[in-house]
Length: 294
Length: 278
Image 1 (cartoon, helix red, strand yellow):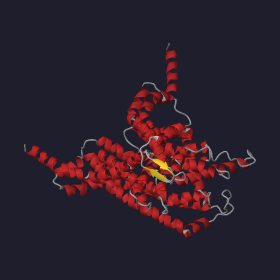
Image 2 (cartoon, each protein chain N blue to C red):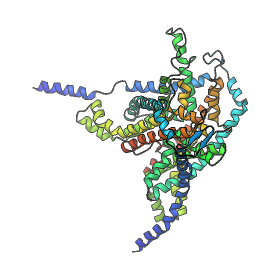
Image 3 (cartoon, rainbow over the protein chains, first blue to last red):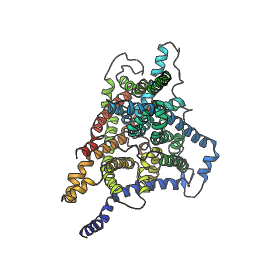
Image 4 (cartoon, rainbow over the protein chains, first blue to last red):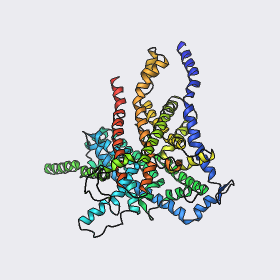
């Protein structure tokens, strides 16, 4: 009787007070996230005329995207590039996550930290590093020249799609690795022991036990890497040259040189839409913890 | 008959022993792939000649030039200003927000959580465009203020989700126990709750700081004549890679490693230890 009263009292007292906790973050969410995105959406229906932005409602910007081959082809190209990057990052990251989480006993944390560390190293520094390696006067060319394989420096390494894929993959590996490692590490050892006792070797165990249990981590890793690669405009601009241009570059160009904000907003919103689909798929099939969970 | 059983038994044992070969070597190769570029940057910063390839003389010349470059030093100070402000706001917004989404039940909570993840999971270019349009609509000139608000968009959820996962893992038992033992809510907050989540806040703040200090994709949309360090370096990169770029990269690299060191101390298994010790 008394206890109930206390519970009722604390509930009554706490509820309005605890909602105060939500005030700062709600203001942040509305003002800094939602309003800007809505304004971008509204902007995408306006029209540029000369150097003015006209306040009319039109679908012209979206129609332009579908009518003009350049734009939707670039979207497809970026989509394909993001797909390749994510696959390569998983092929690189999966065996690594498996090795560290299931084979290593000692120094496991150290090797884990060594994969995470590049994530903390400046994004631009990593781009600079790859330009140095792949460039005309870069290390790769120097090595080939010194080994006598080529007589002149090759320009094939820099300024093409391959160098963009390499650099994007390099950026993406830690993002793929973290959710995979988390998923693999969580698999209870007695499941593996049971499979072993039933006569399965490492391959059988992997196919029937480990891999299915790691799928949520795989989906999350794929999604993170995909979205990073899909919207990037700095790496294609720095390493891609003419053939390496991606969707992000034309979006950026609308706000820089072309000065067509309504069209740029429409292109941005299409990217938003594609990213949202990928995110929803990942929400359904991926792990419930995000990358920033401890 | 017995021999046959023995035979299959042996085969079975052979089969069972099979493990993936070369996994260790493959992993080492990936570590080499991850670290070679970083080592290259450091080596080039000491190269004596302006041509990026030869190492005719080891020199500290580029580092000296770096500190005499007043534009670079001021953009570094700008970056520190922006990142520290953005992290301060992130700690307030993120910690209160974490308590809100963990401890308070309200309708539309899942949507709230999904929407507040947007700035960290959407491609940066979208946040950049949206922020730019937002400020132009408000007629706010591009300046330090716009960059800082742009950064708060992603630093707040970083801290919030670090603290959220800590709160979820620890549960409410310790606080309830403290209250049962007669501690006032204020006392519980300062003696139980804050010590438990302190490392998560610091870890989240460090992560947010590292992301903010390094941010270029959103910042590039919001920068007027007011440059941060990444914007300045990006400007340098467009005129080819000078040894100064390598020197500044090496300094940033050292700085990142220091931050990682602190990060490693503040996150990880600490909270679990706390739980085991009781």
